[in-house]
Length: 510
Ligand code: ME8
Image (cartoon, rainbow, N blue to C red; front, side):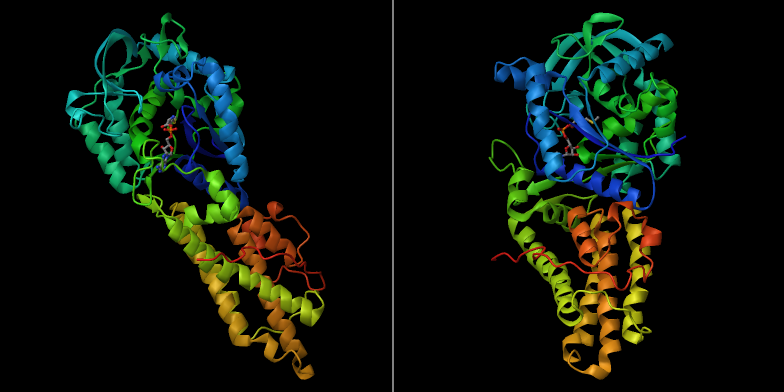
């Protein structure tokens, strides 16, 4: 069971274009997937699109389009954004895929057969933006408590899932497994929400048709959240290729934004309990990003597309910024000032300059050949000993999903190497023939430090990692490396040729 590390993002609604908020989760999931691969794990990384429901139907109707045609026209924007951001997802699931609708129907039929679904009438509030049913007591000033938009009154015949039947089991699971819902503050919110009492969940709609028809009553379409959550198992062939399914399920990690945690931490586990399937190992809810202090919204006109930032800064700088600037579990604020600041200080200066000055010296003093080092001295040992410390801190921080701290610990090595080069000042001994071996050692130590930095930044900045790796003279592919073996000091073969190249992160005017 679960030989494969399985990580997911939410599947995004196709009512609108991807933006830096949706990309935030996807980039984080990509860093996790790439880190696990670097550790030697088999990974299945899933993302996709959520295409049914009232919100998407409305978006299509506003443009006089058929919802399927609309969805088909939106999906390429998501795929293109993930391509630009160098996202290494293994699959892309669409809820309008046959493979998905089939599984959704099998699943709901199973629960119906079991007696966990019954016909009733829903009468209450609905928020189309969040696609959520709301109690009067949940409204804030008459609006949706989550997105603060107006809600609509719905009265229709619906099928209900016996969520209340599983409330105790879900609560017990959350309480007994501290890893299951994170971070801690969010977990506490989920626990109190369940304790305040769960009613059964409406899982079908009859007032519109854009959804998966219920196999046992074609007048109804499946409630979009019930449909959407099932993407996590439809993509891995639940119900058709059970061998593959059990190799991949349960998911190791569902990454979600905090606003959709309840669906993932309450309804989804209850659905899985009802279907007698194992629960995901971990659900992590990250914070929300504002833009220059304001909520990102179409009406404010401050929605930022990843593409525009990538054009300006490049893919890796984009990825670096979003993972380094914010503490993943809490809210953060995007600003151009902090992006530029980090770009110049940490990428152009700390990393980019280090790479270029080391390679320039190897070219100048050793004609671009990796020299053979002499026995390391105290300064060299300082650098060498930093590596295992950074490796173990990186591992710890990645398992906590503290990407900012993981990168900060990688930068400890970048700083250590910069200091080392400053202190050893190879330029000051380059013309002294009696110190040739010493110069060899300094240049080797610097190159080997860079090679290891390349490995450590691979999950965050894959292109830059590959460039640095090749420039230090490595000919094996970095993507074939396993961290524990490849990060051993001294793997860089002397005699190989370094490669020069352009500045990795040209400085930008402030
Ligand atoms: O909720 N800051 O899709 P969605 C950080 N289809 N993250 C943000 C963000 C922001 N400002 N804005 C969006 C849905 N996100 C459902 C999910 S899953 C079975 C179904 C990210 O298109 C964050 O991950 O509204 C959030 O949970 C997700 O986009 C919502 O995307």
